[in-house]
Length: 475
Image (cartoon, rainbow, N blue to C red; front, side, top):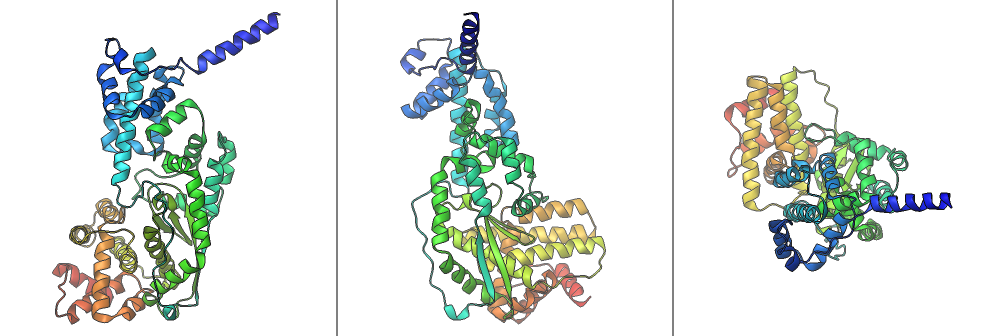
Protein backbone atom coordinates (compact mmCIF):
# COMPACT_ATOMS: atom_id res chain seq x y z
CA UNK A 1 0.00 0.00 0.00
CA UNK A 2 2.85 2.33 0.94
CA UNK A 3 4.55 1.55 -2.42
CA UNK A 4 1.36 2.35 -4.35
CA UNK A 5 0.91 5.63 -2.43
CA UNK A 6 4.54 6.61 -3.14
CA UNK A 7 4.15 5.93 -6.89
CA UNK A 8 0.89 7.90 -6.95
CA UNK A 9 2.52 10.90 -5.28
CA UNK A 10 5.51 10.66 -7.64
CA UNK A 11 3.25 10.54 -10.69
CA UNK A 12 1.26 13.51 -9.41
CA UNK A 13 4.46 15.45 -8.84
CA UNK A 14 5.68 14.76 -12.37
CA UNK A 15 2.39 15.88 -13.86
CA UNK A 16 2.26 19.06 -11.80
CA UNK A 17 5.91 19.88 -12.57
CA UNK A 18 5.50 19.24 -16.27
CA UNK A 19 2.58 21.54 -16.98
CA UNK A 20 0.43 24.33 -15.64
CA UNK A 21 -3.31 24.78 -15.86
CA UNK A 22 -4.01 26.07 -19.36
CA UNK A 23 -4.96 29.72 -19.35
CA UNK A 24 -8.06 30.64 -21.37
CA UNK A 25 -7.67 33.98 -23.14
CA UNK A 26 -10.85 36.05 -22.88
CA UNK A 27 -10.40 39.78 -23.50
CA UNK A 28 -13.61 40.83 -21.76
CA UNK A 29 -12.47 39.08 -18.59
CA UNK A 30 -8.84 40.23 -18.86
CA UNK A 31 -9.64 43.93 -19.20
CA UNK A 32 -11.55 43.83 -15.91
CA UNK A 33 -8.52 42.49 -14.04
CA UNK A 34 -5.84 45.16 -13.52
CA UNK A 35 -3.38 42.53 -12.30
CA UNK A 36 -3.05 41.20 -15.86
CA UNK A 37 -0.91 42.88 -18.58
CA UNK A 38 -3.52 45.00 -20.34
CA UNK A 39 -1.44 46.42 -23.21
CA UNK A 40 -0.02 43.03 -24.16
CA UNK A 41 -3.42 41.37 -24.07
CA UNK A 42 -4.96 44.18 -26.14
CA UNK A 43 -2.25 43.81 -28.78
CA UNK A 44 -3.01 40.09 -29.05
CA UNK A 45 -6.73 40.77 -29.26
CA UNK A 46 -6.22 43.32 -32.05
CA UNK A 47 -3.53 41.52 -34.07
CA UNK A 48 -4.10 37.78 -33.76
CA UNK A 49 -6.97 35.57 -34.81
CA UNK A 50 -8.78 33.50 -32.21
CA UNK A 51 -6.99 30.35 -33.39
CA UNK A 52 -3.61 32.08 -33.21
CA UNK A 53 -4.26 33.24 -29.66
CA UNK A 54 -5.36 29.75 -28.66
CA UNK A 55 -2.21 28.24 -30.21
CA UNK A 56 0.31 30.50 -28.53
CA UNK A 57 -1.46 30.44 -25.15
CA UNK A 58 -1.53 26.65 -25.27
CA UNK A 59 2.21 26.53 -26.01
CA UNK A 60 3.06 28.87 -23.14
CA UNK A 61 0.67 27.10 -20.76
CA UNK A 62 2.50 23.83 -21.46
CA UNK A 63 5.57 25.21 -19.65
CA UNK A 64 5.86 24.47 -15.93
CA UNK A 65 6.12 28.23 -15.36
CA UNK A 66 6.15 31.23 -17.74
CA UNK A 67 9.67 32.10 -16.53
CA UNK A 68 10.95 28.98 -18.31
CA UNK A 69 10.69 31.04 -21.52
CA UNK A 70 13.77 33.02 -20.41
CA UNK A 71 15.80 29.99 -21.49
CA UNK A 72 14.81 30.66 -25.10
CA UNK A 73 17.19 33.61 -25.30
CA UNK A 74 20.05 31.13 -25.70
CA UNK A 75 18.27 29.58 -28.70
CA UNK A 76 18.39 32.90 -30.56
CA UNK A 77 22.15 32.97 -29.99
CA UNK A 78 22.52 29.31 -30.97
CA UNK A 79 21.00 29.81 -34.43
CA UNK A 80 22.22 33.38 -34.98
CA UNK A 81 18.78 34.99 -35.07
CA UNK A 82 19.82 37.47 -32.39
CA UNK A 83 21.76 39.37 -35.08
CA UNK A 84 18.50 40.63 -36.62
CA UNK A 85 18.23 44.12 -35.15
CA UNK A 86 14.43 44.29 -35.47
CA UNK A 87 13.92 41.55 -32.88
CA UNK A 88 16.53 42.58 -30.33
CA UNK A 89 14.05 44.60 -28.20
CA UNK A 90 11.83 41.51 -27.87
CA UNK A 91 14.77 39.23 -27.06
CA UNK A 92 15.89 41.72 -24.41
CA UNK A 93 12.36 41.70 -22.99
CA UNK A 94 12.41 37.91 -22.95
CA UNK A 95 15.43 37.99 -20.61
CA UNK A 96 13.34 39.77 -17.96
CA UNK A 97 11.57 37.35 -15.64
CA UNK A 98 7.83 37.39 -16.37
CA UNK A 99 5.23 37.23 -13.60
CA UNK A 100 3.96 33.87 -12.41
CA UNK A 101 0.53 32.57 -13.34
CA UNK A 102 -1.88 34.06 -15.87
CA UNK A 103 -0.06 37.40 -16.05
CA UNK A 104 3.12 35.59 -17.07
CA UNK A 105 1.29 33.52 -19.67
CA UNK A 106 -0.06 36.69 -21.31
CA UNK A 107 3.35 38.37 -21.16
CA UNK A 108 5.24 35.45 -22.76
CA UNK A 109 2.48 34.77 -25.30
CA UNK A 110 2.61 38.42 -26.34
CA UNK A 111 6.41 38.39 -26.76
CA UNK A 112 6.28 35.09 -28.66
CA UNK A 113 3.62 36.45 -31.02
CA UNK A 114 5.43 39.75 -31.62
CA UNK A 115 8.65 37.87 -32.32
CA UNK A 116 6.90 35.52 -34.73
CA UNK A 117 5.19 38.33 -36.65
CA UNK A 118 8.42 40.31 -36.89
CA UNK A 119 10.48 37.33 -38.05
CA UNK A 120 7.85 36.37 -40.63
CA UNK A 121 7.91 39.93 -41.99
CA UNK A 122 11.72 39.79 -42.19
CA UNK A 123 11.62 36.45 -43.99
CA UNK A 124 9.00 37.63 -46.46
CA UNK A 125 11.23 40.59 -47.25
CA UNK A 126 14.26 38.50 -48.21
CA UNK A 127 14.88 38.76 -51.95
CA UNK A 128 16.65 35.42 -52.31
CA UNK A 129 14.49 33.46 -49.89
CA UNK A 130 11.14 31.91 -50.81
CA UNK A 131 9.00 32.00 -47.69
CA UNK A 132 6.32 29.46 -48.60
CA UNK A 133 5.34 26.77 -51.09
CA UNK A 134 2.94 27.84 -53.87
CA UNK A 135 2.04 24.49 -55.46
CA UNK A 136 4.15 25.09 -58.59
CA UNK A 137 5.57 22.51 -60.98
CA UNK A 138 8.90 22.48 -62.83
CA UNK A 139 8.94 24.11 -66.27
CA UNK A 140 12.16 23.83 -68.31
CA UNK A 141 12.86 26.76 -70.71
CA UNK A 142 13.62 25.97 -74.34
CA UNK A 143 17.27 25.40 -75.26
CA UNK A 144 19.35 24.38 -78.28
CA UNK A 145 20.51 20.78 -78.26
CA UNK A 146 23.28 21.47 -80.77
CA UNK A 147 25.33 23.58 -78.34
CA UNK A 148 25.42 20.90 -75.63
CA UNK A 149 28.89 19.67 -74.73
CA UNK A 150 28.52 15.93 -74.28
CA UNK A 151 31.77 15.86 -72.30
CA UNK A 152 30.08 17.71 -69.45
CA UNK A 153 28.44 15.17 -67.16
CA UNK A 154 26.04 16.39 -64.49
CA UNK A 155 24.32 14.54 -61.67
CA UNK A 156 22.34 15.26 -58.51
CA UNK A 157 23.23 14.13 -55.02
CA UNK A 158 20.18 13.91 -52.78
CA UNK A 159 21.97 12.31 -49.83
CA UNK A 160 22.59 15.41 -47.62
CA UNK A 161 18.98 16.61 -48.03
CA UNK A 162 17.66 13.11 -47.40
CA UNK A 163 19.72 12.75 -44.21
CA UNK A 164 18.25 16.00 -42.87
CA UNK A 165 14.71 14.97 -43.84
CA UNK A 166 15.18 11.56 -42.21
CA UNK A 167 16.48 13.11 -38.97
CA UNK A 168 13.59 15.56 -38.78
CA UNK A 169 11.10 12.79 -39.54
CA UNK A 170 11.90 11.16 -36.20
CA UNK A 171 10.29 13.04 -33.28
CA UNK A 172 12.61 13.62 -30.33
CA UNK A 173 15.64 12.13 -32.05
CA UNK A 174 18.60 12.40 -29.67
CA UNK A 175 21.81 14.36 -30.21
CA UNK A 176 23.94 11.20 -29.99
CA UNK A 177 21.85 9.69 -32.81
CA UNK A 178 22.15 12.79 -34.99
CA UNK A 179 25.89 13.48 -34.79
CA UNK A 180 27.08 10.26 -36.53
CA UNK A 181 24.65 10.92 -39.39
CA UNK A 182 26.42 14.21 -40.09
CA UNK A 183 29.69 12.41 -40.79
CA UNK A 184 29.30 12.85 -44.55
CA UNK A 185 31.98 14.35 -46.75
CA UNK A 186 29.34 16.72 -48.15
CA UNK A 187 28.57 18.02 -44.66
CA UNK A 188 32.31 18.47 -44.02
CA UNK A 189 32.48 20.75 -47.08
CA UNK A 190 29.35 22.59 -45.92
CA UNK A 191 30.89 23.29 -42.52
CA UNK A 192 34.15 24.40 -44.14
CA UNK A 193 32.28 26.78 -46.45
CA UNK A 194 30.19 28.24 -43.61
CA UNK A 195 33.39 28.81 -41.64
CA UNK A 196 34.64 31.38 -44.17
CA UNK A 197 35.37 34.83 -42.77
CA UNK A 198 32.42 36.46 -44.53
CA UNK A 199 30.02 34.40 -42.38
CA UNK A 200 29.75 36.25 -39.03
CA UNK A 201 28.64 33.12 -37.13
CA UNK A 202 30.61 30.03 -38.20
CA UNK A 203 28.95 26.65 -38.50
CA UNK A 204 30.20 23.62 -36.57
CA UNK A 205 28.98 20.02 -36.39
CA UNK A 206 27.89 20.61 -32.79
CA UNK A 207 25.78 23.63 -33.72
CA UNK A 208 24.39 21.73 -36.71
CA UNK A 209 23.37 18.72 -34.59
CA UNK A 210 21.95 20.79 -31.72
CA UNK A 211 19.67 22.78 -34.02
CA UNK A 212 18.43 19.55 -35.64
CA UNK A 213 17.76 18.04 -32.22
CA UNK A 214 15.67 21.01 -31.09
CA UNK A 215 13.81 21.18 -34.42
CA UNK A 216 12.75 17.52 -34.07
CA UNK A 217 11.88 17.90 -30.39
CA UNK A 218 8.34 17.83 -29.03
CA UNK A 219 9.33 19.33 -25.66
CA UNK A 220 7.13 22.30 -24.70
CA UNK A 221 10.03 24.78 -24.59
CA UNK A 222 11.30 23.70 -28.01
CA UNK A 223 7.81 23.80 -29.51
CA UNK A 224 7.39 27.38 -28.24
CA UNK A 225 10.66 28.44 -29.87
CA UNK A 226 9.65 26.88 -33.19
CA UNK A 227 6.39 28.81 -32.98
CA UNK A 228 8.07 32.16 -32.37
CA UNK A 229 10.90 31.63 -34.90
CA UNK A 230 9.49 29.90 -38.01
CA UNK A 231 12.86 30.17 -39.82
CA UNK A 232 14.99 29.50 -36.75
CA UNK A 233 17.39 26.70 -35.86
CA UNK A 234 19.40 27.22 -39.09
CA UNK A 235 16.02 27.15 -40.94
CA UNK A 236 15.31 23.59 -39.73
CA UNK A 237 12.09 24.89 -38.17
CA UNK A 238 10.91 25.69 -41.68
CA UNK A 239 11.85 22.17 -42.84
CA UNK A 240 9.98 20.36 -40.11
CA UNK A 241 6.92 22.61 -40.54
CA UNK A 242 6.80 21.68 -44.25
CA UNK A 243 8.25 18.18 -44.15
CA UNK A 244 5.88 16.54 -46.64
CA UNK A 245 6.30 19.40 -49.13
CA UNK A 246 10.08 19.16 -48.98
CA UNK A 247 9.87 15.43 -49.63
CA UNK A 248 7.69 16.20 -52.67
CA UNK A 249 10.23 18.79 -53.80
CA UNK A 250 12.94 16.12 -54.02
CA UNK A 251 10.61 13.85 -56.00
CA UNK A 252 9.74 16.63 -58.47
CA UNK A 253 13.40 17.31 -59.17
CA UNK A 254 14.22 13.62 -59.50
CA UNK A 255 11.40 13.13 -62.01
CA UNK A 256 12.80 15.95 -64.22
CA UNK A 257 16.51 15.21 -63.92
CA UNK A 258 17.44 14.59 -67.55
CA UNK A 259 15.73 17.71 -68.92
CA UNK A 260 17.31 19.83 -66.18
CA UNK A 261 20.79 18.47 -66.93
CA UNK A 262 20.55 19.23 -70.63
CA UNK A 263 19.19 22.73 -70.06
CA UNK A 264 22.09 23.56 -67.73
CA UNK A 265 24.63 22.10 -70.15
CA UNK A 266 23.28 24.23 -73.01
CA UNK A 267 23.40 27.32 -70.77
CA UNK A 268 27.04 27.00 -69.66
CA UNK A 269 28.79 25.29 -72.60
CA UNK A 270 29.16 28.46 -74.74
CA UNK A 271 31.03 30.18 -71.91
CA UNK A 272 33.58 27.43 -71.27
CA UNK A 273 36.48 26.28 -73.47
CA UNK A 274 35.24 23.92 -76.23
CA UNK A 275 37.46 21.14 -74.88
CA UNK A 276 36.02 21.46 -71.35
CA UNK A 277 35.46 18.03 -69.91
CA UNK A 278 34.26 17.49 -66.40
CA UNK A 279 31.86 15.58 -64.24
CA UNK A 280 30.06 17.49 -61.54
CA UNK A 281 27.60 16.49 -58.91
CA UNK A 282 25.23 19.03 -57.34
CA UNK A 283 24.41 18.22 -53.73
CA UNK A 284 21.16 19.33 -52.14
CA UNK A 285 21.06 20.61 -48.56
CA UNK A 286 18.67 22.43 -46.21
CA UNK A 287 20.28 25.12 -44.05
CA UNK A 288 20.62 28.90 -43.75
CA UNK A 289 23.05 31.60 -44.93
CA UNK A 290 23.35 30.78 -48.66
CA UNK A 291 21.10 29.55 -51.43
CA UNK A 292 23.97 28.19 -53.50
CA UNK A 293 27.67 27.68 -52.88
CA UNK A 294 30.75 25.71 -53.87
CA UNK A 295 33.50 24.30 -51.68
CA UNK A 296 36.24 22.18 -53.20
CA UNK A 297 34.58 19.54 -55.33
CA UNK A 298 31.15 19.96 -53.72
CA UNK A 299 28.57 22.20 -55.37
CA UNK A 300 25.82 22.84 -52.85
CA UNK A 301 22.30 24.17 -53.06
CA UNK A 302 20.17 24.89 -50.01
CA UNK A 303 16.73 23.97 -51.25
CA UNK A 304 14.81 25.69 -48.44
CA UNK A 305 15.57 28.94 -50.29
CA UNK A 306 13.79 27.59 -53.37
CA UNK A 307 10.80 25.60 -52.12
CA UNK A 308 8.77 25.10 -55.33
CA UNK A 309 9.82 28.37 -56.99
CA UNK A 310 11.63 26.43 -59.70
CA UNK A 311 12.08 29.59 -61.78
CA UNK A 312 14.71 30.49 -59.14
CA UNK A 313 16.06 26.97 -58.94
CA UNK A 314 17.20 26.64 -62.55
CA UNK A 315 19.36 29.81 -62.82
CA UNK A 316 20.83 29.23 -59.38
CA UNK A 317 21.67 25.65 -60.30
CA UNK A 318 23.19 26.85 -63.57
CA UNK A 319 25.24 29.48 -61.70
CA UNK A 320 26.68 26.96 -59.26
CA UNK A 321 27.32 24.34 -61.95
CA UNK A 322 29.21 26.93 -63.95
CA UNK A 323 31.49 27.33 -60.93
CA UNK A 324 32.18 23.62 -61.27
CA UNK A 325 33.19 24.19 -64.88
CA UNK A 326 35.45 27.07 -63.88
CA UNK A 327 37.20 24.91 -61.30
CA UNK A 328 37.53 21.98 -63.71
CA UNK A 329 39.39 23.94 -66.41
CA UNK A 330 41.34 26.30 -64.11
CA UNK A 331 45.10 26.47 -64.53
CA UNK A 332 46.74 26.74 -61.12
CA UNK A 333 48.43 30.08 -60.53
CA UNK A 334 51.89 29.30 -59.10
CA UNK A 335 53.25 32.85 -59.28
CA UNK A 336 55.01 33.94 -56.07
CA UNK A 337 53.89 37.42 -55.04
CA UNK A 338 54.22 39.71 -52.05
CA UNK A 339 51.34 39.42 -49.59
CA UNK A 340 49.75 42.73 -50.57
CA UNK A 341 49.82 41.90 -54.28
CA UNK A 342 48.46 38.41 -53.64
CA UNK A 343 45.61 39.90 -51.60
CA UNK A 344 44.68 42.14 -54.54
CA UNK A 345 44.90 39.26 -57.04
CA UNK A 346 42.69 37.15 -54.78
CA UNK A 347 39.99 39.82 -54.98
CA UNK A 348 40.29 39.84 -58.79
CA UNK A 349 39.80 36.07 -58.73
CA UNK A 350 36.60 36.34 -56.68
CA UNK A 351 35.39 39.11 -58.99
CA UNK A 352 36.11 36.98 -62.06
CA UNK A 353 34.55 33.76 -60.77
CA UNK A 354 31.36 35.28 -59.37
CA UNK A 355 31.06 37.88 -62.12
CA UNK A 356 31.21 35.45 -65.04
CA UNK A 357 28.85 33.04 -63.26
CA UNK A 358 26.42 35.89 -62.58
CA UNK A 359 26.55 36.93 -66.24
CA UNK A 360 25.81 33.37 -67.39
CA UNK A 361 23.07 32.84 -64.80
CA UNK A 362 22.29 35.50 -62.14
CA UNK A 363 21.88 33.91 -58.74
CA UNK A 364 19.17 36.46 -57.90
CA UNK A 365 16.90 38.87 -59.74
CA UNK A 366 17.59 42.58 -59.55
CA UNK A 367 16.04 45.61 -61.19
CA UNK A 368 18.14 47.84 -63.44
CA UNK A 369 18.42 50.43 -60.67
CA UNK A 370 19.51 47.77 -58.16
CA UNK A 371 22.15 46.43 -60.55
CA UNK A 372 23.47 49.92 -61.24
CA UNK A 373 23.66 50.65 -57.52
CA UNK A 374 25.54 47.41 -56.87
CA UNK A 375 27.95 48.09 -59.73
CA UNK A 376 28.67 51.57 -58.40
CA UNK A 377 29.19 50.21 -54.88
CA UNK A 378 31.40 47.40 -56.21
CA UNK A 379 33.64 49.84 -58.09
CA UNK A 380 34.03 51.93 -54.93
CA UNK A 381 34.97 48.81 -52.93
CA UNK A 382 37.48 47.65 -55.55
CA UNK A 383 39.14 51.05 -55.67
CA UNK A 384 39.31 51.09 -51.86
CA UNK A 385 40.80 47.58 -51.86
CA UNK A 386 43.41 48.76 -54.35
CA UNK A 387 44.27 51.58 -51.95
CA UNK A 388 44.48 49.16 -49.00
CA UNK A 389 46.60 46.55 -50.77
CA UNK A 390 48.79 48.16 -53.43
CA UNK A 391 49.01 51.79 -52.28
CA UNK A 392 49.19 51.26 -48.49
CA UNK A 393 48.78 47.67 -47.29
CA UNK A 394 46.15 47.15 -44.58
CA UNK A 395 45.39 43.42 -44.51
CA UNK A 396 42.46 43.57 -42.09
CA UNK A 397 40.79 46.47 -43.92
CA UNK A 398 41.19 44.82 -47.33
CA UNK A 399 39.61 41.58 -46.06
CA UNK A 400 36.73 43.53 -44.52
CA UNK A 401 36.11 45.31 -47.83
CA UNK A 402 36.34 42.06 -49.76
CA UNK A 403 33.75 40.44 -47.51
CA UNK A 404 31.34 43.34 -48.06
CA UNK A 405 31.73 42.89 -51.81
CA UNK A 406 30.97 39.18 -51.67
CA UNK A 407 28.40 38.81 -48.92
CA UNK A 408 24.94 37.64 -50.06
CA UNK A 409 25.71 37.82 -53.80
CA UNK A 410 26.98 41.34 -53.24
CA UNK A 411 28.39 44.12 -55.43
CA UNK A 412 31.36 42.13 -56.79
CA UNK A 413 28.96 39.70 -58.48
CA UNK A 414 27.40 42.53 -60.45
CA UNK A 415 30.60 44.41 -61.27
CA UNK A 416 32.03 41.16 -62.64
CA UNK A 417 28.82 40.48 -64.57
CA UNK A 418 28.99 43.94 -66.14
CA UNK A 419 32.62 43.36 -67.13
CA UNK A 420 31.57 40.03 -68.65
CA UNK A 421 28.78 41.70 -70.59
CA UNK A 422 31.24 44.17 -72.13
CA UNK A 423 33.71 41.40 -73.01
CA UNK A 424 31.02 39.32 -74.74
CA UNK A 425 29.58 42.35 -76.54
CA UNK A 426 32.92 43.51 -77.92
CA UNK A 427 34.96 40.31 -78.16
CA UNK A 428 32.40 37.48 -78.18
CA UNK A 429 31.60 34.40 -76.06
CA UNK A 430 34.87 32.87 -77.18
CA UNK A 431 36.89 35.49 -75.31
CA UNK A 432 35.14 34.77 -72.02
CA UNK A 433 35.61 31.04 -72.61
CA UNK A 434 39.32 31.52 -73.31
CA UNK A 435 40.05 33.44 -70.10
CA UNK A 436 38.10 31.11 -67.78
CA UNK A 437 41.13 28.83 -67.18
CA UNK A 438 43.46 31.81 -66.63
CA UNK A 439 41.85 33.61 -63.72
CA UNK A 440 41.21 37.11 -62.45
CA UNK A 441 44.13 38.99 -63.99
CA UNK A 442 43.36 37.68 -67.49
CA UNK A 443 39.68 38.51 -66.98
CA UNK A 444 40.40 42.11 -65.93
CA UNK A 445 42.78 42.52 -68.85
CA UNK A 446 40.15 41.15 -71.27
CA UNK A 447 37.71 43.75 -69.98
CA UNK A 448 40.21 46.54 -70.62
CA UNK A 449 40.86 45.18 -74.12
CA UNK A 450 37.11 45.21 -74.78
CA UNK A 451 36.88 48.81 -73.55
CA UNK A 452 39.73 49.87 -75.85
CA UNK A 453 37.90 48.32 -78.81
CA UNK A 454 34.46 49.68 -77.93
CA UNK A 455 33.03 52.90 -79.30
CA UNK A 456 30.20 53.03 -76.76
CA UNK A 457 31.35 51.40 -73.51
CA UNK A 458 33.19 53.48 -70.92
CA UNK A 459 35.85 52.25 -68.53
CA UNK A 460 34.53 51.91 -64.95
CA UNK A 461 37.88 52.07 -63.16
CA UNK A 462 40.32 54.81 -62.18
CA UNK A 463 43.48 55.49 -64.17
CA UNK A 464 45.69 54.14 -61.37
CA UNK A 465 43.63 50.94 -61.12
CA UNK A 466 43.84 50.38 -64.89
CA UNK A 467 47.58 51.02 -64.99
CA UNK A 468 48.11 48.49 -62.23
CA UNK A 469 46.07 45.83 -64.08
CA UNK A 470 48.32 46.36 -67.12
CA UNK A 471 51.35 46.04 -64.84
CA UNK A 472 50.08 42.76 -63.40
CA UNK A 473 49.29 41.43 -66.88
CA UNK A 474 52.84 42.18 -68.04
CA UNK A 475 54.52 40.58 -65.02
